Image (cartoon, rainbow, N blue to C red; front, side, top):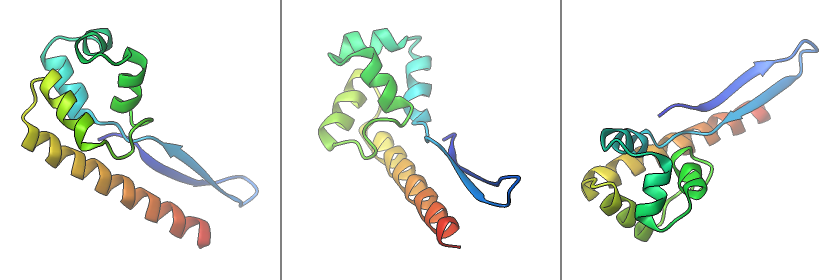
Length: 107
């Protein structure tokens, strides 16, 4: 999972926060293993390639519904247990980044 929050101090000494979305690498890796494009996933899943891209790149579905996770697992031929484990890791890392950011802003 790439991404997270990069925290820096500006020239004025003021704290700045830069948010970088976490990516669902497990989806992207499986898509690449199948040799599929975003368009291929969109076509096979009946969702737009743009919407799927937002899911894969962490901009949509901060916590995917069980229904969507099962659907994407079926489309990408991904074992559902693996998908659940990877999604849990994604959610835990995202929550960790939120805590870090909140601590940084209050500190």
